[in-house]
Length: 393
Image 1 (cartoon, rainbow, N blue to C red):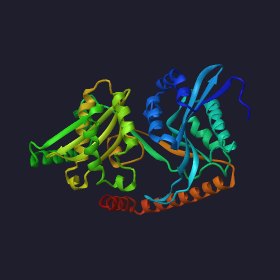
Image 2 (cartoon, one colour; image 1 turned 90 degrees about the horizontal axis):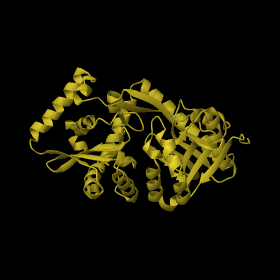
Image 3 (cartoon, rainbow, N blue to C red; image 1 turned 180 degrees about the vertical axis):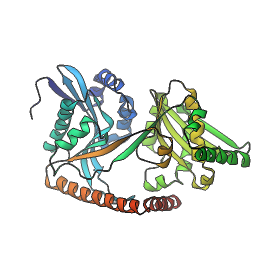
Image 4 (spheres, one colour; image 1 turned 90 degrees about the vertical axis):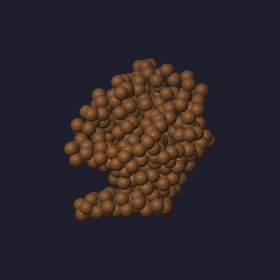
């Protein structure tokens, strides 16, 4: 398809080329109804630095009648593991060349025409054999980009049975008492009773520290790492890990004034952590975790409520974004949700098409098994059992 005369597409693949369009990027990002920190230029550049030579920047800018209209903020991964999983277990991870549109990375005036242009331009990368797959990281299912990404690719090249995930958020109440009023009487009582139990049994030994500055990172990372190693997320390979990637992103967050890294200590021992990012009017919940041996005190919930008290006192903050995926605490506290799907488009070559069919078959099987277990009431039990084993290991 030839581009209409009013559209012009340019690509930035180096730091200098990206810096040259910084003002355009920041203007498009600030005009988003719900700006996502992953698509912030400074956050993006910190990711590029953290990845090193394993990935390259790739920014697509679409202009209409000479004016910036939209951008696709991407990373080109030379060797990206296409994880084929059953439950929490990945049993096959072939590497592919992947052009990934980062979460929230499709920004601008994304109507039907521009969204179609964006998707077709990304697919040209596949036709030029520069990549094996284009991946949109968690697209909102009611967006024009999602619609175009599902309608334009053929049946052999678009991913099938892509799992829908709920994304929750919550309007921040004026004070913590209004938050408690949104909960059931039983839920409200459980939180206060458990908190009182912890504070009574360990009187004078409870301390909550929130780290925000770059010179506090070593202490924060040490405490959070100690907790993370005992969580099921760590067993999955998705927990908090002290490495160069983590330190690069946290350092950038601290320098930009975003970082809110909170840890609950009991008798000087770290028990629960919550990492959030203050971005614009949003508090973006990034990672949480607690030591399972403190689980009966619900230290994670106690920490969340204490952090929420501070957030309520900040009158500039409007919303908490709970991040990817569904969870019981998100359903309990969230007051708004939407559906998201990670979309894959494969190149029209034998090996990428084979991988698409294989991944689609496994995804369909996973969905079928989950639906059966859900219908007989076993899905939750199996998930808790699996997480428990990962925590112990």
